[in-house]
Amino acid sequence: MRIRRHRRWMAPVVAAAAVGLALTGCTGDAAEQDAADVDCADYEQYGTFEGKSVSVAGTILDLEADRLSESWADFETCTGIEVDYQGSSEFEAQIAVLAEGGNAPDVGIVPQPGLLGRLAAGGWLIPASADVEANVDEWWSADWKQYGTYEDTFYAAPLMASIKGYVWYSPAEFEEKGYEIPKTLDELTALSEQIAADGDHKPWCVGLESGDATGWPGTDWVEDYMLRLHGADVYDQWVTHGIPFNDPQVAEAFDAVGAYLKNDDMVNGGIGDVSTQVTEAFQTAGLPILDGTCSLHHQASFYETFWNPEGGDENTVASDGSVFAFLLPPVNADDPLSVTGGGEFPVAFRDAEEVEAFRTYLSSDTWANNRVSLGGVISANKGLDPQVASSELLTQSIEILQDPETTFRFDGSDLMPGAVGADSFWKGIVAWVTGEDTAQVLDTIESSWPKG
Image 1: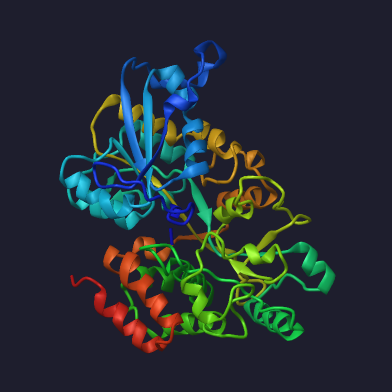
Image 2: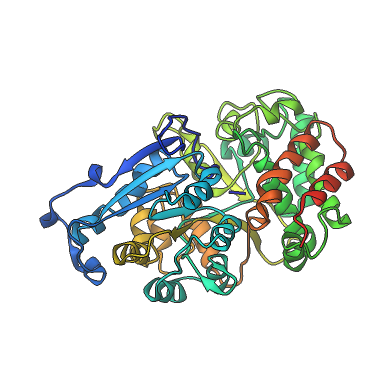
């Protein structure tokens, strides 16, 4: 799914604000600098707007919010536009309410195409300008453009991205114990069984807790298996309800995941038994790898941020470092590369030149290189230099996204109607892990799919 730096990226914040959102702010004020120190050549195309401001809200918090604000500091200096960003763990739950009441920010960084569609259907969004669309046509694939489109109207360019389906591990442990990176799903099963048989610890560590979004990490597992077991066409049918949620192919993916998540021999290394998955926060769930009480953790590329929870750099992400990751393998070693992933979309609630100038900058290759060079994230912008990424893994991730041979599919629950993708699917994962059988869970989720 999505914290999608947002939910999935940073820990929730609980400070209350007058509009009913729990907000943690990062403003352009923190990035003020003398214009004489900034080369404004890359920003002349956006114009000057002295005294103008743009309010922005999203789910990006803490360190990632600081870096986000830094990524547009030069834009502020050169254009005169003051950008005021407010991050909230409740953004997704509250943005439609704010829009309906006329209290939405100028720009909302939306992490779900499904939520974008809901806001567009409510009549609250401003279509993207011709300049934003021109940037997307130049720097993004048609698939990514489609994720920002609703009923043939283009509303928002993509922003950042993530690749789901990484399996994090300790290179030192693999070398010491002779473990090899699996090339197929069967080899992954064999590796997991080998680690369990060695008896030092359970192989997998898993955390499904994420506040109101508890369960979403489990949806990522299912989505990865749907794509690998059944291919892109079936995946597309599933997320659009071309096949029902209780289709046998979906059940097969659930059961394949259940061989790990519902198996006390497989989870929860360094944490506890199967039941602890629903109480362990996704942000901390992979950390037992660092102390040798777990070997494998399934989480997206953005999880790189969490290996140094105190903000240091003692744990390196590299093939010869403290921790690294391989992609969840395919069924057959020679299958084409297929990955799931996510991203965000800056939608506009106010029709103003300064708002579109800001959104045009966010859709540019300049912004993508500025933000990625600050660390911790990637983008699918084709103008991004992979070498500016902050780690070997993120460079690899960018190259995967830019490779025209890669089959990419957006996070399935992000594409589904909110009643399913942001509700019954999450809740179904929790019920399933804690004891309900697959058929019962899938029937319940299927019954929640909106009629018509």
